[in-house]
Image (cartoon, rainbow, N blue to C red; front, side, top):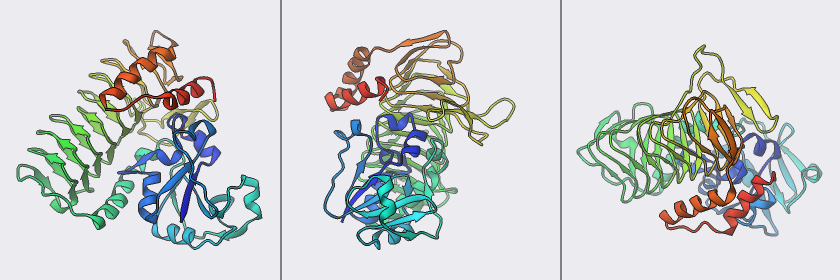
Length: 386
């Protein structure tokens, strides 16, 4: 079985700035990315089909007989069954939306020539950036069900205080937690391989801590929240997602937010997640290039990959920061900060790629990785306007 997750153009645009640097399927929802979710549910490896400039880093593995699945979809048993029952040259539709098809790679218009199978049930999907934090709890619950079927949790230290069901705390091999308070009343808590929750931390589930990530001393976490792999987190976090390889290592508040990869929030960086008048939050849309009503009362910061904030940075409600930004200074910076910006409330200038690359090389080296030409070319393409 060869499985390829394809990006729907409109959804890819709606999930910017995060999809500037990765396919939709590489976004994290709960413990797993969307691609990892499908691989776990189908028990087959999956690849991704996205923009041409992303193919070198995320190549699509194509064969003679392929199952193409819309990458915005969140797998569930009924959807998995309907997709795996497809025959060659059949396509699964929900209204006008192509959920999946089986066969060779086709242009969207050509899929209409396939035998149409209508899917009568409802499905979950990721279509807007705020879905990543709003549906985080659901993602953690479903991922942990799969994980717990395949392996058992390591023993939780007696120094840990658990409020609720102790069996809802799952520790992978090498995970550490000492003298902290874990509350599973509202959902489970997952601690990944070689991850650590330091003493004094207080965590409410649902919560996921990725492998090699750390909650520093006395961190406060309100679920549902998900921290990807290789992150350091401190201070206060509420219903937020760090996709991976990013740090919020010091005091400060992060709420109803999504932070991309290779980001760093300086000490005492704070974001607002609620307007003073309690009105719905407007968020910049890359698709329409204007502010759009999210319909949400709580919505904070959306920060693209490779962006940073200096100490004491204050982000207003519904701020969107693009890729490769360096934000600092007093006052509130704009609620839309274009990619490759340098500055803050007093004005923005261009963040030169050469400087960004120098910083990225040092950061990758600290993780034992190489910031290579593939990574550089993705950023060059984004900066050149795709």
